[in-house]
Length: 132
Image (cartoon, rainbow, N blue to C red; front, side, top):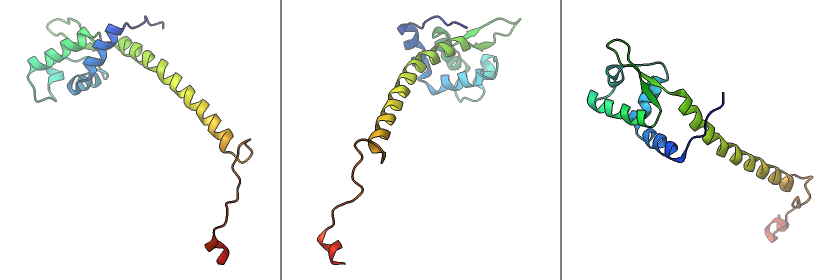
């Protein structure tokens, strides 16, 4: 599956939407399947209207969508948007991991006993050590 690139504005909206713990909880719930506003509001001590506003923010960020099913209006997770965000994050994560692997290799070469700049294994004796 080829994902279209995510614009800076899209990323800004999505990360801003996910900055709120209630919206993250809604996303977590929707990862198990579609739900209505009433179902999404159950675990929270906030009004259904407040939950609807949170859903609107998630919808504007492209993270969820709503459909009509007779009288129901289930909310669905837009997994493709989360996947696009993950791909964006992975670009930087992979680059950072490569730098860490390179640093690990340099450190391994410089600190291993067989390495070219390995420190001497002996330490100078102090006067107290010589007296014992």
